[in-house]
Length: 160
Image (cartoon, rainbow, N blue to C red; front, side, top):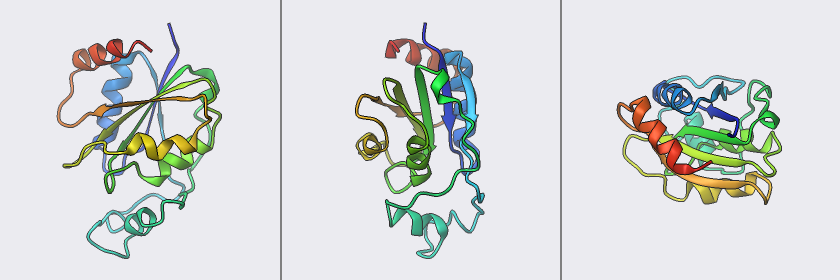
């Protein structure tokens, strides 16, 4: 049996709720990816072309600084990485997280929350942020109320 971690970034709390249930269902440890400078409501106003999130997502090379590097990724075989979908992809803080650790030989399973869009090409956009031998699994959207039972069935179906 593999040792699992659920690492997540949540701007408004929705992804955090999904991550909590997923960690319980997967028998995984939980780690929150926090930006060094927390996002304010104004920062997240995607309709404002000058808001922090819009500026960051318009430059996909931008890497927001994370608050700590204490995830202990080296102790895990499977890392579930969760985030809200921003502009049809993962927020660039997820790239920061992935680039901050050595994921060689590990399996990364993506999960996301979204107000309306799907995962799109999220996995493709993250592959360059991990070692070539890291397996990235597309995962799924965890919108709405998820039950631990349903998520356990999903985790078991992944065979990781």
